Image (cartoon, rainbow over all chains, first blue to last red; front, side, top):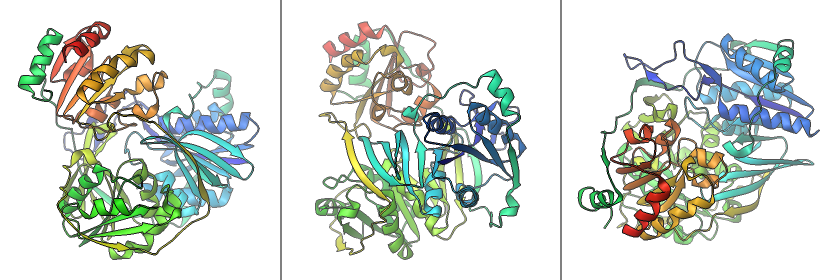
Length: 250
Length: 308
């Protein structure tokens, strides 16, 4: 079974983002970048499926300029077999990303596509579901467990009230939640080996898709700061303040 | 202008978050219709018809919608989408699941998790875990939006809108429901509670979360957790408050043994009053807390329970 894993290069999750002074966007100059954490979980899940003998080949794909090759190489070091970069300098809407990925799905015919549920930069939570819609596939979003059985995949999903398990006909789309697995670290020999694994570069313009922007970013501002509060010295004082000052308990 | 709002429910009760999404819809302005998709969900339709400002409730009552599978629900919404300029759902797990499918099938962008409406085509939404706030204009003729319910007040319920039954039945046949394992709790729902008490890594293990039980019972509070506590396996993920968990904005949020990582703050910083109890005076949580108490939680919690 072929598994396709689309990944995204994003700001490292430990880095606090700053807004540009002109409020045009966030400032990513000289910022540490990494694979989006949910995408890393997706790569790990694919690698585990291969180790279990379920998956035969793992292809990772990313849409972006040449800097995203760094994240593709990381995914190769984690165990993916080959990589595709869809090259563009534009920052594309999720729908256009999904349309590009749809073309890769048509070319590669994977049985399973695993994506992160959302990227920690745009926080959209859209691409997997959109790709599922465009390819006509079933989707198992926010997965905490993925079990392939014959021509179906059972996906346990993190939902508001607890867990929900759905059975999907393959080929299908899975998006990962936090508890699906704990990604491994790439070993040095695997990082060296990854440098020799195939990485195809395909210009986005060659796919024949209208990639016109569907949204326009008017401005980006820092969030409103909360007013600093006070320190209380005891539980008694805390309870008193909550009752008489904040009036949130009685 | 006409706007379709997708109702969040469990086939019996309408979630109050839907009232908040209706408020967002009314801010855009126009006729507001609410779609209830489910099975044996007539009572939900009746509750939806009471929401102030709603002009019509559409009910699609069929077994195919019982578990609101994305494949089936998105096809249903698509069938009636031509009648609407804007389609909205609450950004809870159901809406997050199926709405991007609707957007893609309509060939339009989705604007996720809006926290304000500037005009019929311009919306405000948090990005980077709430560390930046983006104002985004949709360039599509049809808008597909998900709404962060905590950012809007709930619309009232003094209405009696017309209820119309839809006969549309779509079963895509590519997915089926296997089972639900829902957390059973007598406490209020985390997203709807007016008081939330959450534990973090400082709780040390899952057993110690019992220290929060008595306080939650006395306050009628829901119990939450930080991602660190979930990652450490102390408690299940449905208790997680944060960028990647639930977004809450109760009247009172009590953070116990939570350092205040960016990703946790993103999920609770819009609470009206924040209390932090932590033994580390440098913990970032104190920077957003209205009332901070530097104390060992294992001393503070029993005392707090006793004094409430």
